[in-house]
Image (tube, rainbow, N blue to C red; front, side):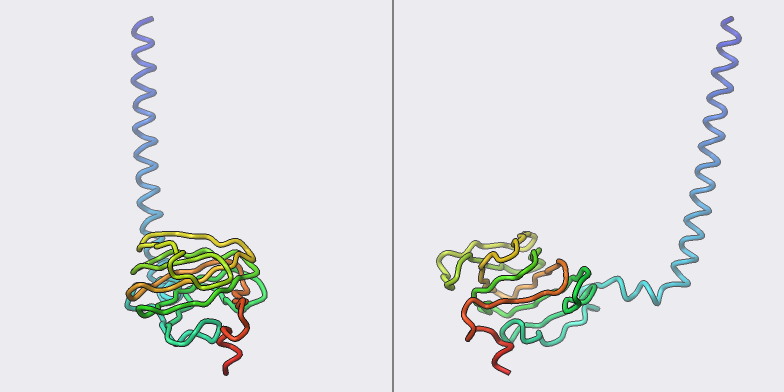
Length: 177
């Protein structure tokens, strides 16, 4: 009986080793196939991957005050639906007056120190300091304002369309065209 148990155990362990070898070989073949596929599709994938030096910065649209730079990383923030991801690069002291968005806004501070306050009046002494690495989400219709302390880059993502509704209509840069 002990011989039978020992024989079954050896066979079972041998089968596991064989299965592990088959799995490793299959995995290696899959990795080779994926690398060949990705090499053939490099051009398509390059449009989906950004390093800091390849981010397509340009002047910010008139949804925010002039002086910032803007980059669309994914989607179309002006579309009627769909996801978007943008980056906003702001110089030291740059301010975004009190406003709100009809859809949720998700903000990640990439670099610098970003300050955010809540309410209808820009009150510098009532702002929360968000250092690089911070994240905030602002629910629809949440009135807020922001300021850059040093050069700041934030990444914003959400559902399109991205809209700014300024509390004070004179603060709306799109009206000053």
